[in-house]
Image (cartoon, rainbow, N blue to C red):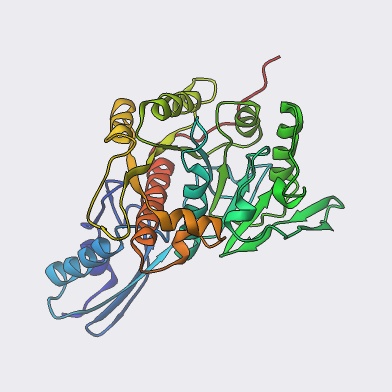
Length: 367
């Protein structure tokens, strides 16, 4: 008997999206079904180009067609993606940005900016449209890490007559930092309202266009900047970066709890344990737990969030950041592979959050 589109869709209705717990047909993830004799082709619309389950879903689709339709069918599965969002379609600010992710630490010196830079590039390399705001006004590091310290953004007049800033683009990531607007050797000594005003400008007066992910590299602590962010835009979720030792975990916990306060209520997407162990280049299989062991997992377990990854203390990661070529730009290296996996896990948690959690609301100012 001839294969029909109904046969194909019925078979694929038994293929479950592992994270969302529903089948691909119910989730409207199947498109462009074509049948030519025994050749069956269709597209699976993943929730992110960084999906870590691509191969699993591909194989499950092929198996379903062979099992329920025709064991001799030539199955061609086109995996593509459409990044999901939980933002309202009529959002007044950052209209074209699907997901806004705050990356925080609670404490300085844990490598949060290094993690953010590598994550942004890793997501961009999957095909996602990515932007990055360096919200650490007093200690901007993104211009150095991306090797664009001398870059100066172009200011132009938008269609509504307002002046807009064109972000700097490097490694496929759109960047904005106060470091582009002030000499690198000058200290920026601003009170909270001035720093908050700069962040608002980076959000509302930069030509971000359409983005799948906008990462916000937050300053250490829980300050005016954090409140300004959640009062300006609905944040999709927060990622917490920590190192394993108690002093870092104590501050990371404060940062995590800040986002979970009822009046803020931003979902915590997960925790990254940076500098989890030291691995010398000449002994790649050795691990030395300089800052303690298992702190990130303990924090994740305590607050029932995902531990998205553990990044070791590797000399090349530091060197690459200093030279303006983050580790993720060195494909085939162990460090690059770790950040690729981390980006996939972050994208995965964003997709799950968008499917099951209510929309984040902008925090209202209380008089």
